[in-house]
Length: 246
Image (cartoon, rainbow, N blue to C red):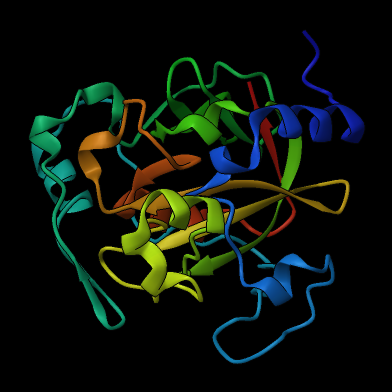
């Protein structure tokens, strides 16, 4: 089946999924969600300007379970005001740990590819290689397939539960106007916001404080990554990067 979907097909598919299924990863500040312009709105809420060239924050490793490398890659890290805990990499299936592999996608270098069946995300590199990351997928992560772009991205994003979710979980009422960034925020340390034809797809690639959900199906969320991995991906991927979801 072709990966190219029309905007009409996408919107139809979204209506079948339902608003309630777009709970954990569809949220952006209302001012941003209401427009496609990337004009800064307010301090702390403005989308980031497109990056000129992605600069790797953490060196890649070969596809082997090199304990010393993974211990470093998934160690606790201080990021601004937040200290992320270490990921128990020794308790994770090795296929979901960050590694360089032969590119199985056939896409152009610089393209992001999410394989929802394998729960893997690829950043296509040069010379037939790809950086591979494990991901966890919630219901929303399975709800859309096609081509789009990373319109913008954010460090330590806020999260706003929709009214439908608050109705099911009244304890979320206190976050109706937005849950501030932090170690327990469902969007984690970084979020990449996906647009198609200038419109928000409500699809997100984001970090997660629940590292045990990587490689698994979760109850909510789009495409979850280890916080350490989404930070690495964030530094490698500029705005306008092509995303393919299969």
